[in-house]
Length: 64
Image (cartoon, rainbow, N blue to C red; front, side):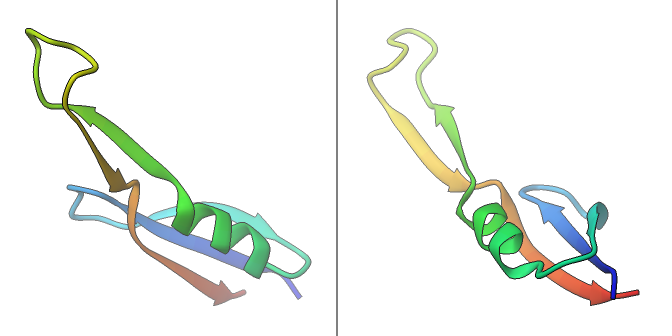
């Protein structure tokens, strides 16, 4: 049975169908939930102050 993984990126207001899989989607969804963005908060001292936020605000698995 195929599954579709739908995500919403941080700061976005719409959903994106990211990938379609035919096997167990849980390992892929777990890795997507772990993805982080690194934002450098200072342009004068790069690397001094960084913030990590999740790349996706939510990950949903749908059956097709």
